Image 1 (cartoon, helix red, strand yellow):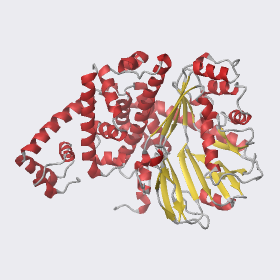
Image 2: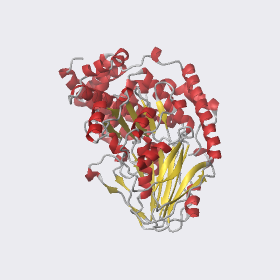
Image 3: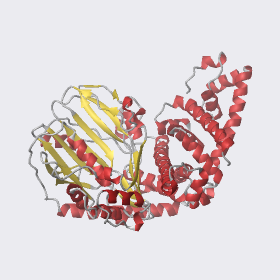
Amino acid sequence: MGMSSDTRNKPLVKPTDEGAFEAVFTRYYPLVYQLAYRCTGQRDEADDIAQEVFLRFYRMPPHARSEVERRAWLCRVTSNLGLNALRSRQRRIYHEERAIDGTQTPTLEDAAQLNPEKHVIDNEQAAFIRSVLAELPERQQTYILLRSIGLSYAEIAQATGVAPASVGSLLARAEREFRRRYHERATTTKV
Amino acid sequence: MNELQPQKYSDSCLDRGLLVSLRDGELTPEETEQVRAHLAVCPDCAADERSMQTASEEIYDLLTLLGPSTDEIPETESVFSALQSRLDAESHREENHAAVSSAAGNNIRFFQARKPQGRNRWWIAAAAAVLIALLVLPNAGALANQFLALFSVQKFQPVSVNPQTFRYGVGEDLQSFGDVSLNSSNLNSISHPTQAQVEQDLNFKLLLPNHLPPGVGKTVQFTLVDSADGTFTFNAAKARAYLAQTGQGSVSIPSQLDGATFTITLAPGVIINYGNQCQRQDQSATGSSSSAAALGCSGGKPFYIGEIPSPVIRATGKASLEDLRNFVLSLPKLSSGARALLQDVNLSSGVVPLPIPPQIQAQQVMTHGAEGVLMTDSSLSLGAVIWQTHGIIYMVAGSTSDSTQLLDSANSLH
């Protein structure tokens, strides 16, 4: 709290500050792309999401008072967009399948046949892992994904709006649930 | 830094969260030392710690398989150039809009009050109608780079509607032509969001008023509006069946529409409610996962501020949004009100029609440098201002039909 009230509430980057924006982009684009790709598994989609994140940042920079807050903001927006995109795609595949022959829920193999391009990019095992991840509650998906790209607990707390002291327990629960579902599915599905 | 107190480490088994925190180096040196001391004397916890380490390795090895590898990450410089081009294009488009807005600036329309209707719900209905109308907006030409056709609202234009000929049925009708699915996140699981929590969940800066109309309570309550996305997939077989059933069998369906997918994305927003006392009313019993939190302020004159990011519409398949709009307009049984609303969407200026029933007076106003619409209902002493700036749709509404008071509050948002 050593900052004066004048500087404390100002964003670190103003929309018109092109140089600073480029610096933020250069520094964080790989991280944002990585997170978007982990969510979606598709290059085009990840690239599109990453660009959208930085467009939002440019148009309305967050009131980040530290690098932790800024990094957390970028990751929060990315994971929201990424998980939304993943959800939408799964729904599309489901509707495509229904349109073809009735009401059967598509399996991973069906999805691969419906969208072969996806499977060129996204190998079968990654698709399987992603589908297990997608079964978790969205918050648990977010904790695991953010941790998997190296965010600290303070950053995860900032990005998800939970208390930093709770992150360890929440992450432990999410990991346990992911592992349980992974093994459950792996015993019944050919990976 | 952890939920468990240090003194507990020595006399009870360790929480798994604590072990995970130890693994990730997130404990203070003092906590680390205490946890390690406990592990040294507690075989159960030591075994837990070893199994947790094994499980962690497995989990994060699996997640690494999701990629991307370092060489799969696009080169930052080239992506930045592409982004800059996109920003330049948007900036150019905004300049064009400013020119068009200036030319049409004096087109102020008034509508006479006739009879009271509803309570203070009409402005919400008007906003909802706009969102529904957005589902069938045309292709956004200049922004339709890559494979996307993209549109977001730029400005509202009041349009008089006759309730006899207008119905909000566009969204319902869509279901007759394909599959509509809506999905929302669950931001309002936070039961009493504080301003700080709201700011965390929004992707934009929260604006609050410096000035409230007289008689409005000073207690504030925030309600998060969920992020949501909707998908509409056109299904020619379903559409044909519906058209035959409704006597519109002669309508032809463009081949590119079959299987075409359109999406609408809404980022999280907030509704701010003022009163003398605010109490949250949980509507979870209704089973609705979307916007389940009720506005629960009482005392003083009702006053609301809505800050909702403009919905983004994309045509992600082989047909454009304009193809869809043209098809809807070709339906002989489309209500005349809905037809007029769709036709009034002006892509070149980014103007979206705001349907105004006869009892409402509406006029165009300037606020925050943007052209907005002021709506008042003097018979019910209700009023609202709606405008869009920097991609966010703002609405200020309250129990007053005094234009000056409403505009003062709208202009005082900062």
